[in-house]
Image (cartoon, rainbow, N blue to C red):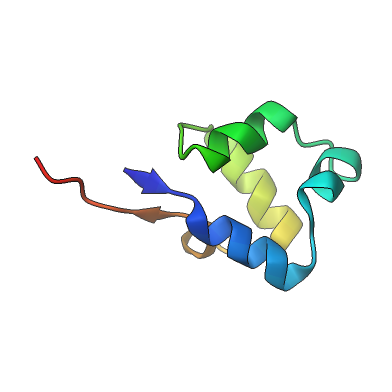
Length: 68
């Protein structure tokens, strides 16, 4: 499973709110919801967040092995 829990920490550190993502960076609220639910998003979305937050992919997402 891919977890985006680190994304929210990076946003807090950079002082960027969800409201700012929507209003200033034109991020779709649906994309934010998908990230909150750890659902699939496109690489374009990940790229966009890395540019906005000036960070690397590993800073905002991580792979968590699920028990089988």
